[in-house]
Length: 127
Image (cartoon, rainbow, N blue to C red):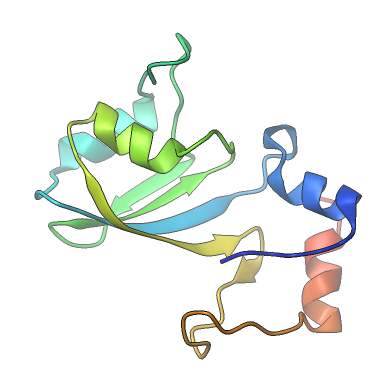
């Protein structure tokens, strides 16, 4: 899911880690994962460019090779790097939600649509 806009404040509010907008990712890994991976991600893993551990806001296995992962930060390739820190390689990654905005599953890859007025209001509403 990508949100495109010429409104810089809106994009900053949606993408800046200081605003803590949850982003939900659906991913698949090359090898099977176990509950210990979820525990590590929720407790925090150290990435190679930062001594401070980064934590998932939420995390759940959805299959032996799949997971739903929620982050509120936006570090470079953070999902792949967090899974690599647990010994897993991400082979498919898909952002399914940003804040209250859920990806429209009726869209084919590469398609786009305008946001409805209601969707835009929900995204710009301050918590």
